[in-house]
Amino acid sequence: VDLSTVDLSDRDWWARPPQERHAALDRLRAERPFAFFAEPDLPGIPAGPGYHAVTRYADLETISSQPGLFCSGRGAVSMQDVPAELHEFYGSLISMDDPRHAKIRRIVSKTFTPRMLERTLDSVRAVVDDVLARARVTAEAHGGVLDVVPDLAAPIPLRVICDMMGVPEEDRSRVLACSNIVLSGGDPDLIEDDDPLTAFLTAGMEMAALMERLAAERLADPREDLTTALVTTEVDGERLTSQEIASFFILLLVAGNETTRNAISQGLLALSEWPEERARWAADPSLDRTAVEEVVRWVSPVTWMRRTATRDGEVGGHRFTAGEKFLLFYNAANRDPAVFADPQRFDVGRDPNPHVGFGSRGPHFCLGAHLARRELQVTFRALFDQLPDLEVTGPPDRLRSSFVNGLKHLPARLTGVR
Ligand code: HEM
Image 1 (tube, protein in one colour):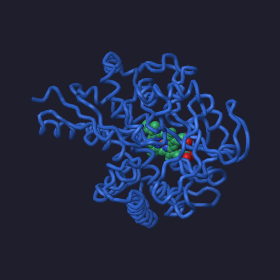
Image 2: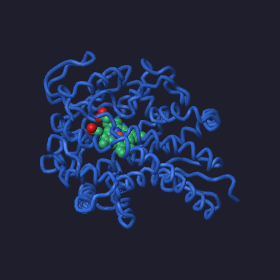
Image 3: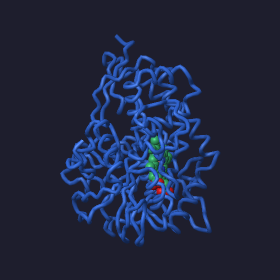
């Protein structure tokens, strides 16, 4: 790999084959663990000075476990600092610092009660069974051919989140259309509008309006769903506003949908590339737990999150000044040979597996990790049982995004269908 051709800001660089990306990340980790990259232009948002790419596991842990020194509030999901007028839109939990973050997170996690979670977890199996049955019907109508992304991977997390929030059936097709735009990771192929920022904001506002309507309905007429819990739960006498619920819903769609979708699709891809591992896992349900962790390590659906230094300091031998930006590359840390034996091997029995696919130590650790694990365990087990003849025919069509490690399409067939 010629490091001078590597630009982690370039969305098209990320659409290259994973082997090539990982070879570059390996060299960066070994030779330039705080490599500096310029920010790309984003329409309407001026590019700032650039950022350091953090690729060593230990440095990533040090940074994410010190939120006072490395904050999220200046932007966690964009390389650029977000202009003040867009704060409300981008200003969800993930880009907040304490004390606001702790307070909102407490309200939200109070609503993810064991009972609420158990109900959702029960419904996961029904959703998965239904999606798989429909995928078989689709394949049978097309000579056995199907597309893993729209037919299997995308509908599962979307339906789970809509069930959880209580989104009515008739609104779901709009939620799907809007979330596809918001979740596109900025891939220009997925946004029909000439101006991606406008398309993004319009879709976000449509979803926010839907959620505000739903929140008002639930306040007047409570039900057993997450939206009701979100509008009624109080911490220190404070409730979430309907607008905060709307932005949390968008965060759930973004954080919970695209991630799980890509873990399913690229988990299937990994299994097709490692047939002995597939056979081993399919034959042994006791591997469901470790195998799902390995899928998340291997795929690292979220490529990075950003932190910004609040004062001068030093990390991993790198001296920095206040305002410097750090992108935490989870995919690079997840293949760090200092932590993982034989990191380029996909091993469904890997244990221990302290991957950072759901984030590293710190206050922002994935709120949906428990739910995502259950969705993935149920989905892969059901795939082995109900679609054992599913064969990935590839090649995958990769998302053009530095932020989301995603697939747009993954051709497959059911070999049992004639
Ligand atoms: C945060 C990954 C599924 C909700 C995060 C973070 C990562 C992540 C890397 C940031 C951690 C940090 O900054 O330290 C994933 C992956 C998933 C997944 C790989 C699936 C395989 C879900 C699901 C939900 C969810 C299903 C919700 C239903 C959230 C929320 C946050 C978050 C709300 C923000 C938490 C905060 O800032 O306090 N996730 N996630 N995620 N995730 Fe997930």
